[in-house]
Length: 154
Image 1 (cartoon, helix red, strand yellow):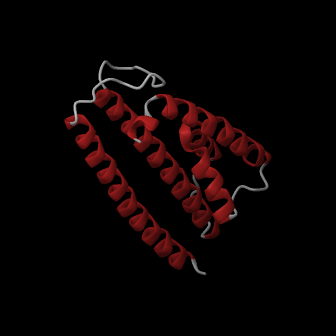
Image 2 (cartoon, rainbow, N blue to C red):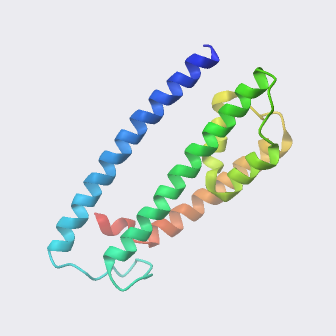
């Protein structure tokens, strides 16, 4: 598989993922409207009560979920782009930038980028640091998103 074919396949994958994400968000948004019109306004007792009503809490939940999705896709694309630049002997994306993207929430995308593009797998900083960051971030995501009312949707 050439780099151009890989980039084209990545574009198609991102298009289909975006279409699927839009459908999921549309479905959940419709469900939120139905629930809001039913008169249910109190947050469940197990939710983190950031705001007084459930709608504001859900907006914050969706913004945080959108950030997590965006930063992981962006980090994955940066790892693939750096691998492509390395093959073409062009100016590369710095290791510090790649690690920063992993540290601010994109560790799962970085790990997937490392495995898919087989890039930075021999560097100890990445081989150890990215999986550790990924485990920490997944635990934080589950805790925060779970308590922000994810289960209130169902």
